[in-house]
Image 1 (cartoon, rainbow, N blue to C red):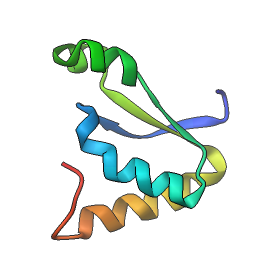
Image 2 (image 1 turned 90 degrees about the horizontal axis):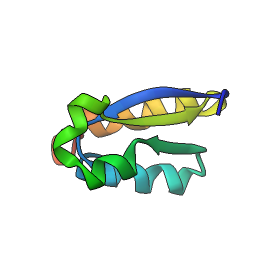
Image 3 (image 1 turned 135 degrees about the vertical axis):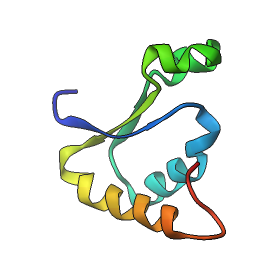
Image 4 (image 1 turned 90 degrees about the vertical axis):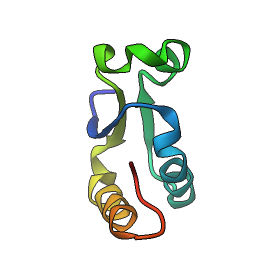
Length: 79
């Protein structure tokens, strides 16, 4: 996983469900680090460091564009 970099950090899994769908539609290589651990121990999210969106280095600019579109959408945004 040395070719992956943290692009965003989330506290709970519900915060990135729409983003996950968009990443899959675009065929972007990604994974969420600590996703399983925090689903088992949700109140430990801050202590563990949150759920980290890890993206392949080749896809970082495309993911940043997707994140910007979501954050600038008044009807739907990442919390």
